Image 1 (cartoon, rainbow, N blue to C red):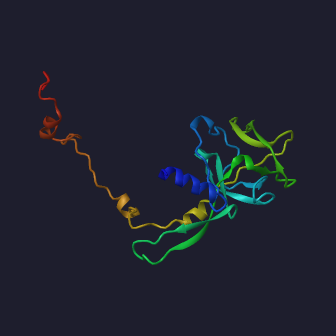
Image 2: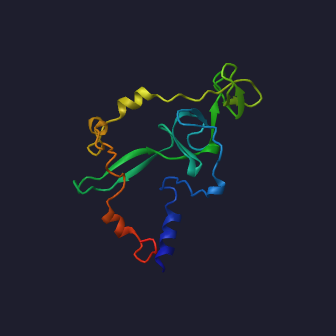
Length: 198
């Protein structure tokens, strides 16, 4: 029996034991205009988490899917690492949920609704801005604002990061007597030796 055929039969037998995986989405089938962004509160309309709400943790645009905090959890097995070959662990992580299985929540009624974009002109600045509204109503579904303070608290410099002091240090001082290109010997190596301009 061919190895690929055996592997295929094993997959068919163990389909219930394997976590659901998101299939590849061709670029032409990817959603171009997203109505759901990171930080939105959504209602899950189908699947094992049907009827629950959650916050969007990450938008996987190339897969037309979302990661929702503490929803659609699956077990991931971590192999033993080089530093500790005896240690193998299991962790719980969020699996992707297809965007068609979730809906945005109406901020007033707290029910799942369909939304669409509408161009709104600011009276003071005169600039046009696209905002989300519940279909058939004048209820706006505002986009969540990024928590910059939380990001700054969570961010920790790693050993490979350049320190702020080194980044501010001036290492190049322009001089009118020194041309801003390599010396003539390097340029001679780069030039075509068979050129008539050499």
